[in-house]
Image (cartoon, rainbow, N blue to C red; front, top):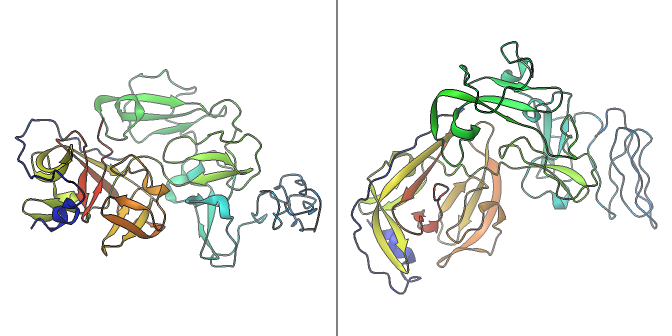
Amino acid sequence: MIRTALAVARAFPLAAVILTPACGGESNQTGGTGGANGGAGTAGSGGAAGSAGKGGAAGSGNSGTGGANGGAAGQGGTSGSACPASVPSNGSACTAPAEAGFAAAHCSWGEDPRPECRTRALCFQNSWQVTEPDARCSEPPLPPACPASPAPMGTECSDPTLRCWYDDGTHCLCSPCSGGSEYPVCQTIDPPEWACATPPAGCPNPLPQAGEPCNQPDLSCGPSCEQPIRCQNGVWQWSQVECPICAAPDTPIATPSGERPIAELGVGDLVYSVEDAAIVIVPIVRVGSTAVARHRVVRLVLDSGSVLEMSPGHPTADGRLFSALAPGDALDLAHAVVSAEVVPYPYDRTYDILPASSSGAYFAGGALVGSTLRR
């Protein structure tokens, strides 16, 4: 029954198992809420990178030139957009830029100010995966029920499903969570209140397309941690969700009575954790659950044979992020990563727990991982 704890016990020289009495706490289970006309640039062989045509992306390659109305990137030079001028056919061939990392989209198209309401494409395993906006995007960016101008922060509102995008780039939501954020856990308020945000200085309005060229390295313009948009390697990159939104519901958690799915655990249930250098049995003091849509997770295969699926922003026990893990990396002192890939998430919620220990860590699939609920 304690197989997952024993799998790591060798890594902790003081691994005496002790029972810590329950110390209270609360359960927080939250509800949820490229240019248009371009031809391709060509790669040359010597000289500077090609420049961007109107409405398109900078060509790259040694002496390549951008197309007249927005060319694609050449090979072997500085970074530029490799996005086609129009949406490619789903499944057609592509080559992903090496620097894109855990991308949510390599390219996007459309006029909607909401990133989730643009057509996006991800080059995965040399094929385009095209995602069209979902039905929720049939509503206008500024529904009639929205205030004519952004409401002051903290003003009471009545419809927690309402989202409002204004012409100046400000976006507001009627939020049931204090401060407008449900991460890592929603501090519920009733009635809900308006929470608004404006893109930082230097960010384009409307928000840039995935794959467009940029010249302000590391500028972050995404509207939330759910939609990170950064200027990296010369292009706007739409990254994976960086919110700490946790684990799949069937993730096996080590408890004194055997492994249990994380979604079944509640406040007061006992789990294995780490206190100083010892594996301990402690109660759970907080539970988090977050609604997600069109989410993607990092799937790790460990050398023990365990498979974990965690949000890219989920922490390891030593403070790294799952999105940073690569084959050969150590997840904890007893488990190495065999493979790491980003895959679509088939569930509508993610889950996390917080054990009553100073580390806040717990054993998932036999490996020690951190908690997003630790503060």
